[in-house]
Amino acid sequence: MARCCLILGDQLSHTLSALQTLDTDDSVLLVEVWSEATYVKHHPQKIALTFAAMRHFADALRRTGRSVHYVKLTDPANTQSIGTEVARCQSQWQFSGWVMTEPGEWRLRAEMETFEDRLGVPVEICEDTRFIATHAQFAAFLATRKQPRMEHFYRQMRQRTGILMNGKEPEGGQWNFDHDNRQACHLSTFPKPPRFPETPHLRDAKALVTEQFPDHFGSMDDWLWPVTPEQAEEALQCFLTERLPLFGTYQDALVFGQDTVFHGLISSALHLGLLDPLTVCRRAEQAYRDGLAPLNAVEGFIRQILGWREYVRGLYWAYMPEYGTRNALDATAPLPAFYWDPERTRMRCMGEAIRNTRDHAYAHHIQRLMVTGNFALIAGLSVEEVCAWYLAVYVDAYEWVELPNTLGMALFADGGLLASKPYCASGKYIDRMSDYCRGCHYDVKRTVGTNACPLNTLYWDFLMRHASRFQSNPRMAMILKNIPRMSADKASAIQVDAQRFSAHLAAHGDDLTWEGGSDAH
Ligand code: FAD
Ligand code: DLZ
Ligand code: SF4
Image 1 (spheres, protein in one colour):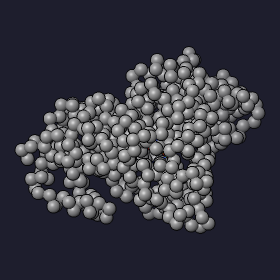
Image 2 (cartoon, helix red, strand yellow; image 1 turned 90 degrees about the horizontal axis):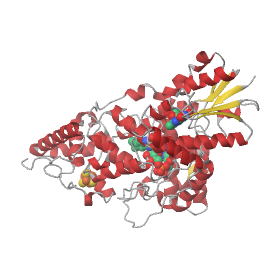
Image 3 (cartoon, helix red, strand yellow; image 1 turned 135 degrees about the vertical axis):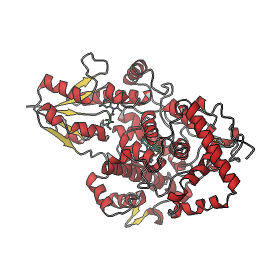
């Protein structure tokens, strides 16, 4: 009797563990469903990318002779959720059992565990082997660490894989070259991100999504994302030759009008299964060994994938579902409407990051962390609303990677499990790392009063609000020493302006009519 294998929209790898268990007569099911596209209102580019990549994958499986059941979104019989579509397929074909690879999100894993009861036939759930570390390896790491920091995990991963190792020593004598990687960027020309010919599947998926999800935030006009393994390979190759050499040096740089700088643009391809993470790391290492890219760039890039990507996934599965409820700093202010409309803020840094998000379903890491994330942190925006926003707006947003980055890294809402200190910054940081402030409505040199940069006001207010909590953190001690050095008048002016600004945002959703703090302070 034949079995069926459910393949989710981000499991598009021929090496997928569930696929490996199939006999020749077994079938595969892929379903396009409304519930996955709308459990948060995903950016139209994410939905179109997923559907187009699923359709290409189904074609590729059929070419190998596999029997594929593919349910399109507009199929009149479609019941529009994964669980009900599996049940419908089972009642139609009476398979002897099902096999599937564990999903990337906890909510779906919980549902998958009910399938066996619902279907009345055996359901095998395989581990997702497309990651470099297994759940057991991450659990072993956690067991040895009181504070499970990424850096320690990353070193283990380097040793385990042998990537950038020189025998037992790290290549170049150091594990981490970040001190070479924090430069602002004053270049006048930048490499262009790769573009791919639009496939018929992508054209159809874009039209479908535009028609079906007209109220989702985001534009479909400019497309950067590979939809097949071949396009993903082209994207990787283009990155390795054109952007990797300067990736490290300008990894933290923010440049007005430059939406991708020297970043890889490969996260969606990795998560969908169009690229294999270990292969990507080895290809970057090879570029270094061939003398095509320097060590600071290659180590920095590999650390993002071998370190951060694996680490956040490990934390997610180890601490969910409780992790998703954390709110260590009691942040509850409503998300301002300008997060959904870059025209509704006069903060140039925020407008740029949100515009990039709207136009590409993308913002690079420093825009996510130090612009929109930092603002959310220091303004005390609701953790739940901010996490939902990040999950909705990015092409690469899956909860296993989005949640630890947003709740843990950007918002410090996990109380310091992921980050040893909050990534809070004033306008001074943005001014050092970008050219945003020069053309901004606000004055980055001012902390209170008319036209004061809101990030300055909110930053100092944030530190004052949480001073007692952070007092015992050695990494925060230096910065906190500035608070008692401030005059009482200045400290109180900051608090008054911060409260008025936050109240204005809560009332209006934007800062377009914010007249600034009082110069009378
Ligand atoms: P590059 O800068 O070129 O990095 C190369 C690769 O390393 C990425 O493709 C990605 O796979 C991996 N990587 C880099 N940083 C991280 C990280 N912190 N965690 C995990 N993997 C990393 N990444 C997502 O993939 N999905 C998300 O939903 C997501 N949400 C984020 C939310 C916030 C608040 C922050 C601060 C970061 C978030 N990140 C997320 C991490 C990071 O910003 C993106 O992975 C990166 O911007 C993707 O673009 P890229 O491929 O050009 O990355
Ligand atoms: C992201 C996404 C979207 C938009 N649509 C579908 C879909 O219609 N069918 C499907 O199987 N998967 C889809 N996905 C990917 C899932 O949301 C993803 O598998 C889970 O979030 C687990 O990572
Ligand atoms: Fe952002 Fe402040 Fe600079 Fe304006 S002045 S771009 S608000 S940091």
